Length: 332
Image 1 (cartoon, rainbow, N blue to C red):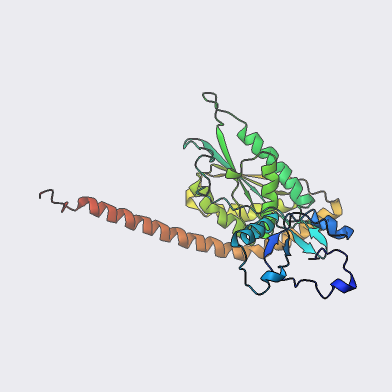
Image 2 (image 1 turned 90 degrees about the horizontal axis):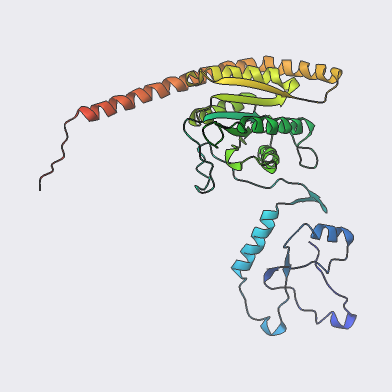
């Protein structure tokens, strides 16, 4: 960070105060003369500068003001900029992931869901961000289709009330084997929220490593929210592999036997030649995924067997407790 300074004569150089003092947020950057530094300064709300101490207090030790330090640090943290030299790199605003049970939503802000309301869910498959940190053309088309689908689902109203007849959740996912999963899902989330979609109905999936993992991570959400219909939005070339993975995983869950799965293909903008090449790549990935799908289905079957056994045990214990005579003595 450059430091602003005025003109100094040779005679005053020796009397220049030593730059040791308290860190404070700077209100303006008028002292920055360099044009690129000025452009950068406009993006940084509260950089830190060192204020020189007076000569009378040079021997004393003044502790920094913790409140000012905290405020300045928080201001910089909220801005969330990363820099490549002097050129700022775009980063999406950070938001906490909404948990499937929506416990992170304040009660006065949360949208109430009637238990009898039809619940649907849209999964939008993410992808890598471009050099500016924004969704590329494939992901942008998926987002556009998701927005259209969301409003199509939620704008149907019950004839007997003014409330929507359907509640819809959206799950953005990251690209496969990505190190930027949080940034990718936040980019989708911010685009959705910007069009008026409630952030309370967006459930972030930042941890899945591939399409199979996407489907597995989705299972508890589908069960907890009593989802009746799931919509999968991805690019046209991607649909066959996504269909294979989601159909196989979700069909292995006995409690989801009545779930309806609908696939939506967003435009990919590929030429016929490029699409053929991409289709060959996807076919190779589908062949490679077969072994992992088999292992996943076996693991899910084992988990369901354990869950069923545990549930049966709990029910038996509860029944035994009811059959036991009460030992409570109401006498004094």
